[in-house]
Length: 355
Ligand SMILES: NC(=O)c1ccc[n+]([C@@H]2O[C@H](COP(=O)([O-])OP(=O)(O)OC[C@H]3O[C@@H](n4cnc5c(N)ncnc54)[C@H](O)[C@@H]3O)[C@@H](O)[C@H]2O)c1
Ligand SMILES: [Zn+2]
Image (cartoon, rainbow, N blue to C red; front, side):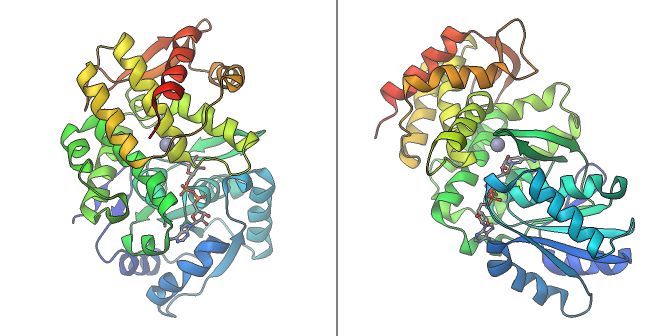
């Protein structure tokens, strides 16, 4: 598998941790830092250390795991550690973890001393197929996801599917949702293949194809001026549900679990206003029902959900901007949905998405 070329950097797949060692040796960084959370420190760091093979010295920065820690306080913690370890402009930060580590680490690196290099070594399925590619860095604030951030590209991304062995089933399903999205918006064949696949056994080839799709889209529109918005399919409603769940549920939904609800609702809206056929709509719902459990969405949550959706700057005159599917494998951007239609789609989910 050839490395995929992205915006000024490569995404490596073959012997990727050896490639990382060669990359670091060639770059001659003054200092190397590895950002981990407590889980990736336990499960992933040993493999990385083995690959670095005592040939390079580095310092470890550790944070607590979880979306609730993707915030400015932990970011300050990372900046303080970089200062304590005397990081300079020629230092590099390696983000070894899931989307929380890759998003927050890249935000911290892109702002420290006006920006130091960073490298993504994603360790969850979701961060491999999605979060580590495309240059979106960020943290959450006041339960609003990714509200603070920048577009800054990494210097390289290294994909090692071996890391996924220690990931639990729920996390695998969460990442699988983004692969499904890539099929739904861009590649009908990929979507069809996923129907016959166990999410826990995603192959390196599927990861590669999924990243290829994301990469093609972000290369065409790095700053999300237009076309890149196709990646938002399922995310207008999905993000609102994720933020709501983060604030209200004892055991909040994972990102992928929330966007699956977004897929159902936005596919429903696609049949209503974008010409998605009933047959394809049923195909999508059927596939998702086979894999993802139902979430108890309550009508009492609708006002809060609408509030979150309406706060998005992409909206127009009270209408909410959604990316919708005219058919599987294609996505159209800038469709405006009314509150009534959004509520109708949520109703569809609550009434029909039962096992
Ligand atoms: N920047 C982007 O373009 C983009 C795209 C999609 C999602 N995201 C962001 O990604 C985040 C979600 O990422 P995520 O799902 O990877 O969550 P995560 O980073 O919270 O990781 C999930 C859990 O798995 C643990 N973990 C990580 N790797 C492991 C491994 N190999 N073995 C065992 N445990 C492991 C983590 O410690 C954590 O507890 C969200 O904050 C979302 O906003 C960003
Ligand atoms: Zn997503």
